[in-house]
Image 1 (cartoon, rainbow, N blue to C red):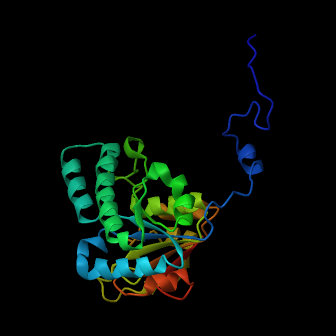
Image 2 (image 1 turned 90 degrees about the vertical axis):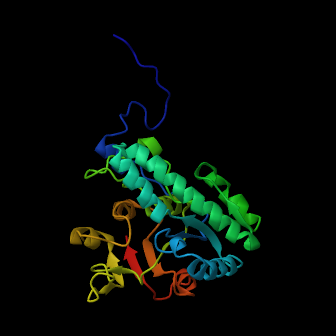
Image 3 (image 1 turned 180 degrees about the vertical axis):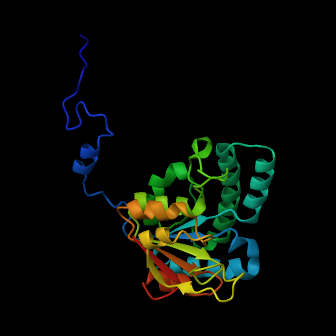
Length: 267
């Protein structure tokens, strides 16, 4: 009979999938940057509107960074929709679509970094995320793109072929692993509505809601990526997501200060 060579430890001989093991092995996690505010700027909702929207927002973020620790995360926007449309038409697999979409959000990160150079804007790539504490100690304002680095290993979406982990999800994953204080999504609407307010003027703003309640609502459309809800439900460090309108100056500051603005989705 063959004998397995083992190293003495608490997980000796475990499969790492046993339910009882999962429940027993829990521990407090280190919060690497507990004062960090992860601010995700939508490509579709912010950057694609050009200088009238983007420049005042850069000014707000830059001035906030003098007092608050920020990580600015960028989305893709209209160019992501274009590349996905072409890729889908050509029969590209989901993993390839994720690779293509990520390149667009990287372009927006470079643009935003340059616009924030006055305040120490510095480009950080996903593989260098652990450099963030040092950058913040140096007084820099880090900027990263939001597409999580699944790339060709992107999860099958279940329905269709569009990658389920996109830039909103990436921002939340970064906030969770860094133990951040907040995760704020900056959009072009006042928060999460019962329906798209641009289509139905009678749609109601949801100011506050629990994540499981929102999952159970099974809404046709949302201003955020659906995958975020399941990640937030299982999160350890991030208790809530805030959604605010970046076309209104001061909303990000209010969200960071815990004031009533936009939508709060609680874990």
